[in-house]
Structures are given as C-alpha cells and as structure tokens.
Length: 278
Image (tube, rainbow, N blue to C red):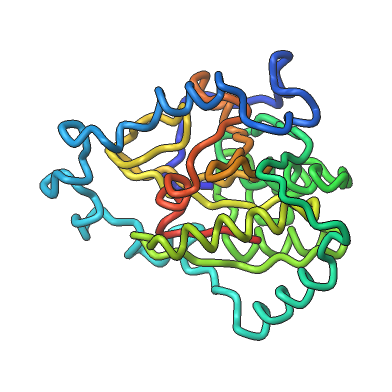
C-alpha cells in the first residue's frame, strides 16, 4: 500500500476477531452490515455535505496535490491488460464456466480475513486472503512481503507485483489487470459487476486497489485523511448490486470492520484512478 497510509506505532499480527462473519461468509450481506455501511459511508445524496460539488475543496482538481499525476507513486503506472491477455482471460473463463448455470443473485466465498501485520502490509494480507478463498494457504504475509519487495512500514505493493503473485500462486486461475479512469463511467460499473460475478462463480477473489482522497468516498471505517490512502482489498462475493470485501486494516484503525458491503457503483468510484485484478 502506500506512501500515504501512515499510522503511529507498530502493527502486530492479528487473527480475525471472534465476532467476524462465519467461515462461509453467509449467502447474503446481513441487514446489520448493509445498515452499517450506509450509515458510515453513504452520504452521496446529501448535497450539502458532498465535497464532490465543492470544487474549491476537490482534490481531483488540485493538480499539485493529485497523486494520479505522480507516476512514481506506488501502485500507479502498472500496465493494463493487453488485448491478447483479455482474449486469453475470456477463453479461460468460458472453458471453466460452471456446468450448471444458476440464477443466484448472491454468492460469497469463504471469509478468510486477516489483519495486516504492519501499516504497509495490505498487499501481502490481501494476497493471503484472496488465495485463501481458493483454498490456497501456501504462504504468509511475510513471505509475500519479501516477494513484492517491501519491508515492515517501508514501501507498498505495486500493481504489477500484485498481479504476478496472484498468477504465480492461484493454482491456474488467470488474473489480468483493469485500470480504471479517475472518474469511472456506468459502463465501468457494469463491467466490474459482471467480472466480480464471474470470478466469484469460479471460486476466485477479484482484488481491488482503492484510492481514497480527502473528502472523497472512503471504504467503510476508513478515516478522512488529508493525504491520499491507497489500499488493497480482496472481494468475497456479490449480493445483487452490492459487493462484499474483506479489509485487513482492522489492525490499523479500530473503526474498520473485517467484512463490509457497498454498492458496486461506490466501490468502482473508490477504485477510480487505480483499478482491480480479475
């Protein structure tokens, strides 16, 4: 993660809390989870409190403070999937499509939550959780940290490094990268929804790369910091137009739940300027 993800003190290893969702994660998002997400983060319709409409306070328009324009920032600049890679991915998905087609509107993979060991270990933690959803538990956060080239509280997991580790360890499932524009379109939302569904149906976790700007939309429980927060999360599944994700930042901020759900449109907005691996 993250030059901008800095917290005081050392974060030590922590297992999922005792009151985390069950190992299956349930078939739907609970009313409590939906309500908490909305209460914590959904003020998009309150125009009096919507900084997206206050251009004087909109970091998207402040090019001097816009990490999107700093190509040296970790996570930015990772290459997008080539047409050949997208074609190969589509062929893989078609070849491995579940034989029995269902009309399920909700599906969740296993809840494999882990708190990140250190402030900058959201990438390694995400790798462990995402691969765990496929039943793969070959490596811990420390091993992945070495492989992506970071040390405790120093450096962040880059886009290409994440994609490489996912492909190296996924047991044959093909991951490719989708870079998102800073202001995603409705077409981007639809594409994300379809890809999340297809990945989940094949037992694989789509991995997201969020970019949380000051006074912008944030993941549930994340603080509104003046510096940009970059954060990796693995998606657990879908529930209609909502998606569930696991958040390793429970060991960084006590306000962060282990598992959250948000509308696809909100999540794609949060990943705008970064993207996801599917």
